[in-house]
Image (cartoon, rainbow, N blue to C red):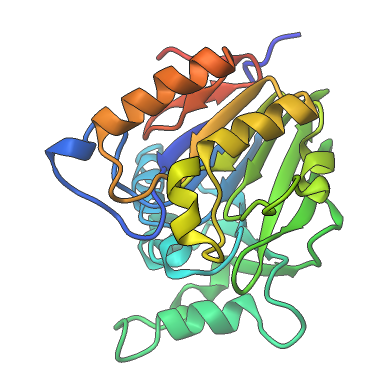
Length: 283
């Protein structure tokens, strides 16, 4: 079966804060944003600084945008690009916003409204809401946002909560697991169950195992843990993602080589990269 209608494209691969400079040009410095195409359906994950570039690309087509935007969580690096997504300013756009991490007492509209309120931002959220549809769920639920499209979810171990996603389409699967911290002993079997047998698992690998001891409780994992989880759960292509802002291109090259030596299907996410269930697509 062809996978040409199912792929993910990276528009932002950093965590914590965007980076600029000669040392981050090849892998990119924008914070988290992923575009996923499932046949005719457009799914977007997170609204870090990378979503501005995605919006520009969509606007350039001249076509109205219908999409589902899923948030893993609402820390600043994952939402800071939200006001700069140009399709929000097209009255023809129809975009559903999904979140499963805020609990019963908070709403996504309230959180994003705070981000876009004075004195932090000059344009209020209400100026965009004509094209928005809010969809609240509880992490762990199975969602069916579009016909023939199944999105499974699970809670992640991160301060203030976060949600992991698995998208199943026409018998293939792509998972996004960020931001999460692995247990000190063993593994998070809830995540393992979600990603079991997946073609692609994009995983929070902010640290190395050696660095992790200084970051316990910060809510992030390691690239080595990504490979251990992939081996345990039978994932074909673990993708190292959510790079620490201090990670240079040269450092990521070293991680990529070490990861491939341990798991031949391993990849390191970079801006502009396209990954299908069969692996990286060369553009």
